[in-house]
Length: 132
Image 1: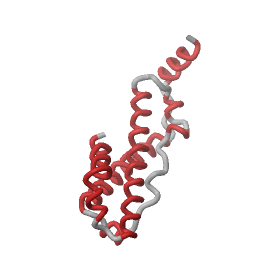
Image 2 (image 1 turned 120 degrees about the vertical axis):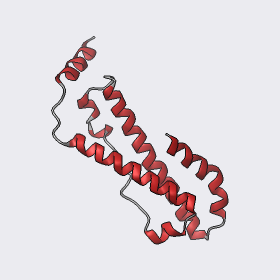
Image 3 (image 1 turned 90 degrees about the horizontal axis):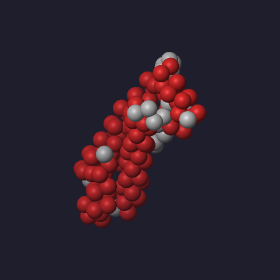
């Protein structure tokens, strides 16, 4: 959440000054990267909240593994290193941090996709919740 807040503060406030110093095409790239950062962070936060709901018993493991609750594909699009190198230092730091977080969450999500046996206790709790 701290990274999301840092990104918001930078791209909404401090980054405006940095953005104005860029060439027109670099401004477009800066804006695109800020959207990619936001997308990666929101996908990661959403995934983490879903896993928290599973851990708290608010969702069954089966529900938590449903495709709509899995990590979205936010990390596929990335700018090249030349484009990234032209952006302000703080923007690059936030971009790299968001990529790193997204990749870590992606690895965690992939481990869940491996044939993990469903918890019988969670299934029973889910069945009881549905009936009562």
